[in-house]
Length: 313
Image (cartoon, rainbow, N blue to C red; front, side, top):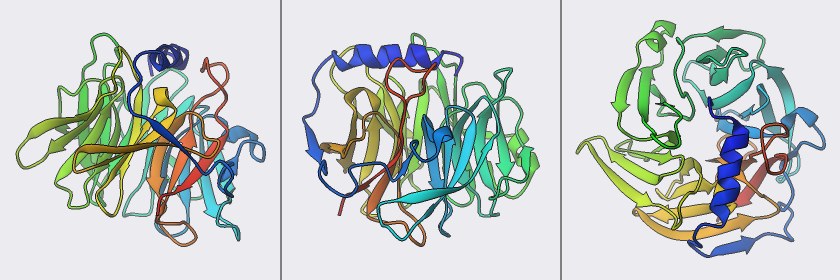
């Protein structure tokens, strides 16, 4: 982001004191999943993770605030995974998704602060830029046919942005993305409903929203009381529940039928960033896998320590 991560985290700390919001339930503090599924204590570069995505074939791909991308696979333990590949591909890595073509697509900020989408082989042996520079590139999601991604001016005081999409199949498509949604503030996380009729998104400081593709209408689902809060990535469960990482409350929130249901603090997770249900052999489809935000030098808070899992069945 043009705004430093340090500035974002200053706002995060400020936000914690601004309004109570929903009550948070502590869960799993003494469970086998109270500690990281993958930890920075075993892979030092995994500190300060950003987004994650599954390929449905036994791999999870995770991006980091330090510019690394990781491939994570399950182990014999249901509560621990391992890193089998890692590669530094930029100054900062952002959204990530796996295309129907078998390639991994990631948002990357270069050393000169330009943001682009790159295409990678799953072993990271080949990295190919496919898009032009995209201002405020951030969150990704995919419906298997299209890649959706956010853009914005990255301004906390006059936020302006929206969502693009491109059709998988040709690298040239990434040179001419189509606008799905505009006038949506500083857009952050993205997720699609199971029927693909609704696009859920978070405004970084403005809450959780739903955009109906048919009616072309936006509905605000949630915003915490207080002057400023940080809303991050989201995902949708098989039952159409929506789950959101809320940095400033150090919690994961659940919504159903556009209504708040509950807020959880799972295990020893501190600042949640990205969230997805397990998908593929060895991953639990009824557990959420969640990255922990933070990186020394870019964060006024703690160092992110890896990936957590949170069984919600």
